Length: 196
Image: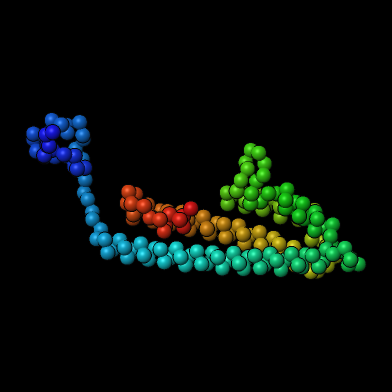
């Protein structure tokens, strides 16, 4: 076996004897910039810390949101209880029926099944709010607590939409940062797991 000194190393050899074998490879004049490993490591460590902080913030928001939903459920349950002399049960049934029909955040329809985009969810939420206003469901409520609960319900939907928008923006920004700074040949398991 004959070993050649004209091996392919990612660059075009300048040795004329090798030119015959590498003539089909185009000559490119590239400027290579090397980032010292310590700078890259510092940057990625800083980015990982920022992503960890973001994940902690998202977890805290999720817990607060879950508590707000549980509190709202108790409030709606109180004002729509059939044992109350004046109940808003039928108004809340209509509100929840509209909300389910709107499929604000996730579609169950055959043609567009799955999670909705932020823009689609916003349009569906607008439709829902307009339907509630058009049917004057807030005015049909017999209890002030019901109207307050309706405002909270709509507010929670808006908050969920904002959290979804915030999460999407952060994921896109993190992908852009990683794409611009980290060579694609090296896997980044800590960052990859966050972006998924």
